[in-house]
Image 1 (cartoon, one colour):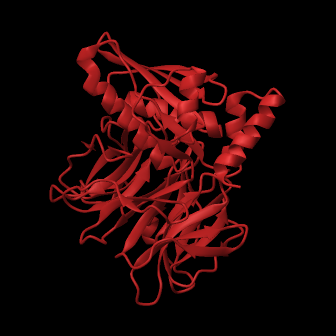
Image 2 (spheres, one colour; image 1 turned 30 degrees about the vertical axis):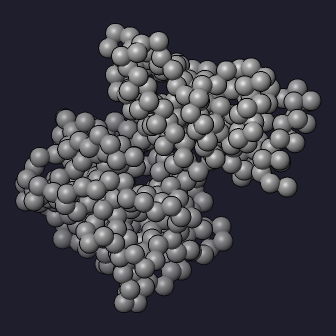
Image 3 (cartoon, rainbow, N blue to C red; image 1 turned 180 degrees about the horizontal axis):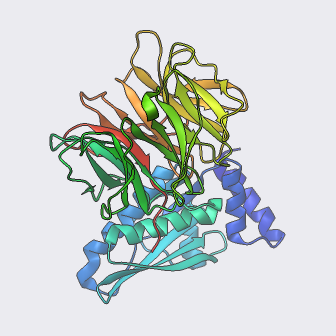
Length: 424
């Protein structure tokens, strides 16, 4: 029995039990099935914004296709909650129709987003979104559609913060997840590395060589308000935030020691040493429960991944075979994504399954692939790859499928970080 028939049978049965339309489809998505989603022609009473309406509809369509949660069909006509019209949509195998009414009020786009269950013609969702940004108002609707079916917001309003050398210097930029709205955040005419965005999406920590020493700085998400966090002589290298946004794990070389990991309290500025090693300990990343940190160390010879408790105890190595780099814990807590170089090969992206104590290769045969970072929902990974001759931003699904370049940019890209979603 195909997915469409399964969903249809489930729908009929659950309606007979009094379940609402949206509950039915939530159950379908949780079981791993894709919903057959139709996109109605978005409408407006203001003829002067017809082009904008079409753009909003297109952005919503692209967002929903990216999620891999839906089979998207776009017949090209407007949906009406009528039995005869619904039967017409059913012939396309459509379960739910997405519909939008657009207007401009006080210089802002107003989108009233709706969803209808095709079988019953019942409206199962309606919400109003307002923004000056045409694409952002569409992204808001898309994220809420995803939340309706999964219980979690989508990632359409997220951004990627990264380093690029198009100016001849390594400056920090941000860009929408789909490659639009590129913004330069620093203009230091120097080297800036490892930008990391706070869990609330408001701050960025990064390491800058602007004043000669690798210093740790913090700035607002729009690039304003730059302030020093740690300017000790030697390394002050960003690793990452704790998931509660209260602490940072950083790499430092205090008192001429080897690079070790430290925990910096953002509020009190109290610094606590985490590792005490004569080797090199770098690339620390908090677990989602903030109780453990994964990091890279060459204490056994080749750089390998280790996990330590937050107090520095219980250090154990994760069994991998190559030169490991850039580990990141999944927001779900069950996996770690990292890059690794095996033997004389280039770097590739791997996924470590903590419960199974084994890892899987996600990229292969396409240049060097490095600096992986999870999306906020843990379903996608952003990384850099030089498969086209220079380092560019790519995204892929968590299983390594659907690898695609975000956007063609001048220069090379490094150290991407996926932000949390933005709200109104």
